[in-house]
Length: 432
Image 1 (cartoon, rainbow, N blue to C red):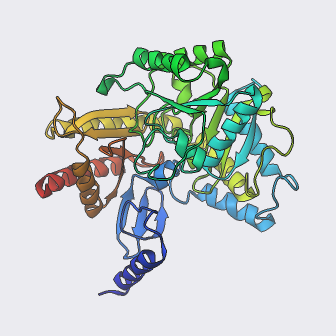
Image 2: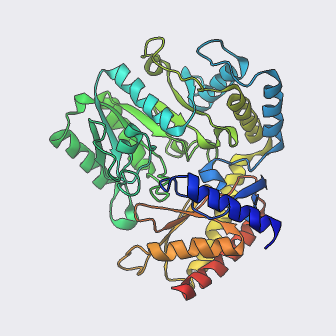
Image 3: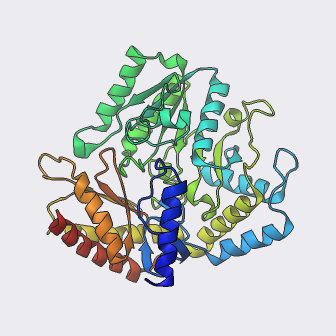
């Protein structure tokens, strides 16, 4: 056994001995370095990484501009806490994000550390503004693993387990899913039924949704649904929160997913690809709403850490300089074309979903019944890793393979990923 293999075995032993089983790891490898669209494991093996830390690395691993910005900030200071003294990277980032989300409309931004923290604070802000308790989320949505985030999440396994009781005054509505027979009209009617049967509309502070469900299966809310939801929340005085934690920063072919429907949300949560791998999140919202909490009501020791803010400002520069929005659309089109070609010879591939470079395939045992093929998906992921391609799954039934390629990936790398996937599909079917 080589030195590298010994090292990988040692790391696996440490992980098994000292890391709890509740922390799942999709692939049994350990990263040693990464650059662009590639990752190398502890044995020196190279992989095409189409996971990107679960949608965190839209500008790729270790983008030189992000590295330089963090290094420069580190030479000045790494932490002072914005609740003690302010610093330029925070306020510059707040100004830029506010104008990206609501250009010229008086939006403001506040920063935290994780996506779940952003979601929790968005709910706090909405409740503080409306003085109402209720929150409506959607089935299949994912909003974090904290108590409130887990309650808002519209999936039971693996997130909720036996962790209750959950946070009160949270209700779930169906999310549009035409492939499984839920139209926008069906979803809207079910939402109105919640007002009739579970909580009056004048007791609802906020409705929160992902414009394209991430962990729920890359399901996109149709524009007509988003527009109707926006009109309904405005009529009823309900704060509309759009969770852009996975969809934000070019992933959908627009800077933010809500922009596909032409609506303007009240609050937007951001994280993941905001800072090229550094932990920072935020809430961006209308000034009259986000200013509702009194001084001291928002914040956090590490919220808007200087290194994260510096990295985030660099990421926004990269988007401006490298035209990554257009690149996202081209990557998505290339992936979709390749997957459609594979689908012709693989009847287990059901619906292919694409919004920009946010691409996924739902695997089924039968295209008529659309029964989930979760076991096959796991074999596909394992076989793809053996071929040198990293992917992960999603969907309520865990039968969807998702693609989160960096927006800096080359056409050649996308073509190679499709070839590797094709080989993995054949191997997975043989193994089954």
